[in-house]
Image (cartoon, rainbow, N blue to C red; front, side, top):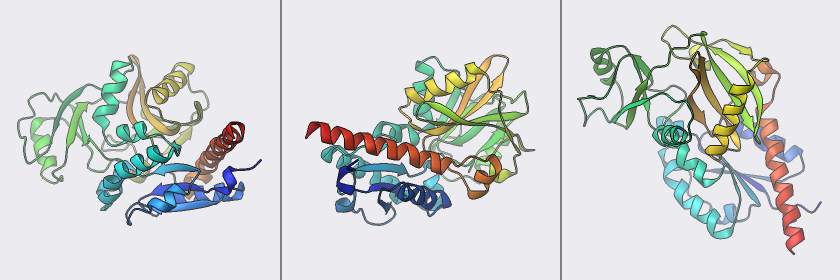
Length: 299
């Protein structure tokens, strides 16, 4: 198959994570050239234009690692791709949701999904009332990830005390859904299929994350209803490759977080016997080959 005259697959990134280079290596091993674009550098418009496909790996958490420039450059990248008809995984609409948990929540709520109630949005320096917030609540940045600057507050006093140490950015307070089963369900979705499901334990502070010391267990008997909800939610947000965090309780499956750019470390690959970056690369090459076929058909 003639692959877009060997145009490369471009990978957009903002931090030198293991996953970025693993993804590039897997794509190259499948016979497609790769170009990496660090959006913390000056925008390489010509380089991006030379690509047959783009994979977006700019994380919402970039803002907490001094990588705000990458977010600032994304609108220009999206316009460049639109102008020259270059496909991106995930599409531009997904980035719109990636940078706002409020948008994700509102979109899913309108479509009938179970999500925690949004109590309030605020920045600590400009709003000290929090009149709509009920307790307990979970507080997190509207744009962020990796549980950075995220905490559970059981009273207004605890909320105010925690916010003293937080940056003056936009936060949300939302309903705290108690993990009755003692774990968070993490699902990795690729191409409308749940490729990996794990149970991630809750730590002493009530949060759940790999870097906080949560234990993981493969979730082989994931209920069909949860699986279907995950796929439909990703369809709703136009996410081709990403992950969801879900709390299952007697009321149903509450979607508490969505990650359009799901990250992974090398030890995660060994832990789960599942290579998320290899599977992501396979999907990217599949799309790339489909574009090649369409180009030949239309020639």
